[in-house]
Image 1 (cartoon, rainbow, N blue to C red):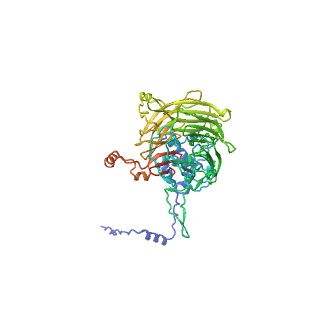
Image 2 (image 1 turned 120 degrees about the horizontal axis):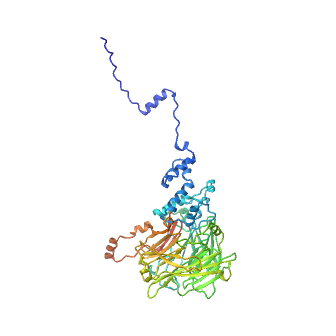
Length: 617
């Protein structure tokens, strides 16, 4: 019987380390099988396929992809991707309305043949600087698409909705305020409307400030709001030392002075930027209207290189002694209003002497008030919400200098036996006609208190005190109240001779103090209150539901305001009142203004401060 051979014991092999494995492989020489070539996703797919894949991604994913490689970065920045995202998020179902020009451009899917009203030039791809002020090159992609930087437009709109902003303080103060913020008295004296001592205006990437405080110098300070500010240099002995840079504070880069006022003690009473050139895509010029306390006024022309000159200086007749406290400027028209409601219309031309078109005076107007000038089409359909629609032919005609304008004056009016109401006057002018170009005039008043109390929304106009702030942008009239809320009215009515009507739409609640200032542009409303908060509201059209949505979007508060406690809770406020009495508000928002990518505000305590809330970060 054969015996089976003994089995050899199993030998355990020691696992080689990575270094030993590499050395043994190198000693064995080259392998018979070549190593497989490394492949990536973007190396085997065409640009068209990758763009089709990227079209299903959200904005956050596209932003992350831009850090993968140069090719992916280029494709993830494709304007058509961001244009589609902008349309889906901010046009179809907007939480906060965007500019009407952008909405019309995306709805019609056309290339803009003229500038979009309110859109700064830095958001056009052909501009030599991006949204952060860095230099950029212009390539063929800018020409192939519609010429807009849709990624930057998306970023700004997203920052608006999320409340992502950066605050910069302008180093220009009007000095100590003589009295605390109080409601203005109707038909006040020389001061006119109760407003801050610091005047602020904005045009493109420039901000203009001036002080209307008695005895202050008649100088307009110019700031740049989209460039990195350099720290000033000072002399210490024989050395030139650069001061530490504070990124939260911006210093003036130029000053505007009238040579005709070198020997005068006049102060500035009003500033107004020409809306026809403030948002132009190709224009590098900003026209600025400046009114003085001696009843004279000037127009300065400022270029992008900060070259400036005084192109107009008008001295009114000797009978006019009341200075201008309110103005509206749309080239070639200027509308001025004095404290006693003398309204004058001037037409500018090639000559330096403006032509007086019309003078008007009213004894029934009361402050606060607002005036606005805008191009107007005499004939054309209106939408159901009241704002007139423009055809493509009319929009192309607006790229040229218009000849027909509408002057709108909104003001307070007493309603007897007690209380206040609102009134609005519309005047249409045609510069091609004689006799001052007058075409038509219409008048509308808001419902009285008693009529509003019988309506379904009986919260309208509960207070007998006059409003504190009024602003108008077709078709909405927004009023700031002492009762911590805003009231929204809509101007309804077809073109003349059909009558106008101010319909009360809604009351907006949210502030914990009196609403001292309101600004409105293309359905985006910004309000400032004595509680130190700035609130953003949406008055947005919803075409699918055929209605308008009006609600709160975001509340803005800077670190300085947060450091002072911001808006206190009810328990904290009651405890402080029991211990110290009612404390004064340290940072009341006296004035606000809104633009596409920023909000300007004037904070008032003992010293007034100008702050710029930028949404380009």
